[in-house]
Image (tube, rainbow, N blue to C red):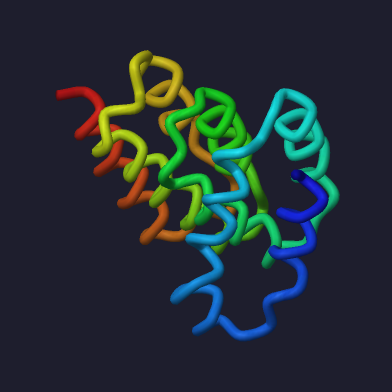
Length: 134
């Protein structure tokens, strides 16, 4: 299943199509992941393009699998602001859906701070940390 997911993230050229249809298709693929596919995804995120990792982060926002959260926390450490932005948004979606049971690890990772953060990303992280702490 990972190969289909990987191909999907690489092959959609139009951002409009990605946001209108692609995210849902990718999320559907993720819901079918087995342990092997999750392992392949974890291995792939360090070598994929900024666009691919951003799309990956977006597509994990509906997942209730703890491995999705682990990948999103890893993507928070990306050098590219767009990847971090999408990871924060997806973590917030997972939280709002009630899928984060151990908030402490998420709060700890958000509070670590990362090199090159913009004011927008810092604000997003601070806002999410506050929501998680309530």
